[in-house]
Length: 177
Image (tube, rainbow, N blue to C red; front, side):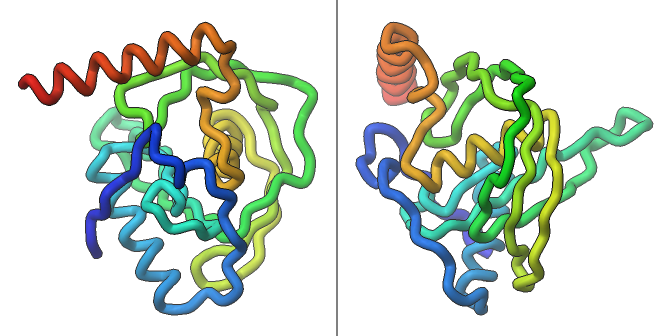
């Protein structure tokens, strides 16, 4: 497993529409393993292959739910190959989203709080499930990536511009440190 470089805005590759995975082979499974390694190291809870400059419809998510005892988070890695949303609820949820490709920046995004999704896992098995809460938000965020959409695209122009300025300032501070 390798930690790969996460591309960041304004890299134009983040706007590419990812192509479907034709065959789930060892190359795809290696990509998935590298994606988890990269996501955990970042750290984050979701990553799309396009964020590693790989325009394939592959997403990994691990919400890392805390244990009942309040100890360390329990890993619950999930792989979504060629994910698609079949239905979305009319009930919406606003969540303060962030993105590994837009480091240290967050914005309030409103999305359906439940989705019916279909995907393949890393073995090629097909799944269809109703997802809700944070998992639904995360799946929608990552599928947006596969379609060349960033969470900042859901913000008003004013909020998006402010966030991009804050990101530039943060990057300058990081270089100075």
